[in-house]
Length: 403
Image 1: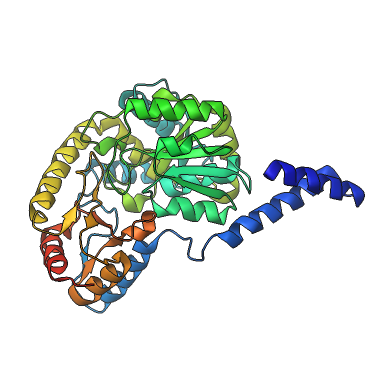
Image 2 (image 1 turned 90 degrees about the horizontal axis):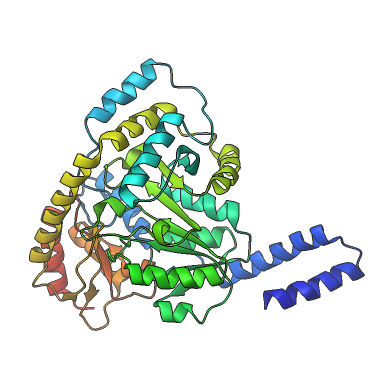
């Protein structure tokens, strides 16, 4: 459809003496405007952030809130990180750096990727970002153009859709790989494994099937590896399966460094070079003292991650036990921080439920409607500081709920 529209637009431009470069710009603008017009308002980071903002308002009024709505792990960062950061500050690493990142961090990150994903990697394959959300946005903004199609398997993190909307991309949601085979023109596809919100880990067979499709369409695979270190099962890195994979990483989840705002991208050197131009124009660089501290975490972090994974398993076991009598059904997650159950109550509306239990019981949840057509689902952060009391209150709220 777009190809035929472009042909017609080019003919009309030629009739009016408009050169092809300006014609293309005008065409892309119109396509982007058309896509935005078809996307409902509110294509932001998701309704769970609406719940989060209201929860913070209530907390400022002194209300006790049990946070089960955001991916804030209960553990803090490795204690040696502060010493490394202070040392770096004292060494004067408080000036501008390069948009690529420091040599020290890029070496540490590439070595971490080699060990974790069992693939070849070097410092030239790494660029530092202020967290993984901005990393994904940078990839989409740098490598795609308005009107391009981006695909994702649902349920999926709401921010993907919000980013696509903001950039004028056509967002394609699929529920199975069989469904994907019927769709043409996907320019990029996002995989999150373990997935947010349901904790699914993609199998090698699934990744092979996806790779075949992407290869036929000359598409980019964006691997959101935010939860890769906290998988309960053996995980195959998408980068090991598909050559044109760009992996996005963060230190927020496994290392509890949400407030440090540091992540990184692993990709082919030519892609890293393109991304550096975008980052140079937008953020300049991530502070080098944060990079130095983070490098020390990646260099010494394997035992930390092992302990975190064991702790996470305990959190999950407790949640499964606590919610065993609640009217919900779900597949136990294979990794990540969340349970994504369907609530087995007639007429259940996750947004209505989430707002009411927040106001009446102080329980903050992520409505399932933010992750796709999942009105009857809720996302529960089972590993959080609010889980101990919050899960019991949630079970009581579900048992007494009448929509």
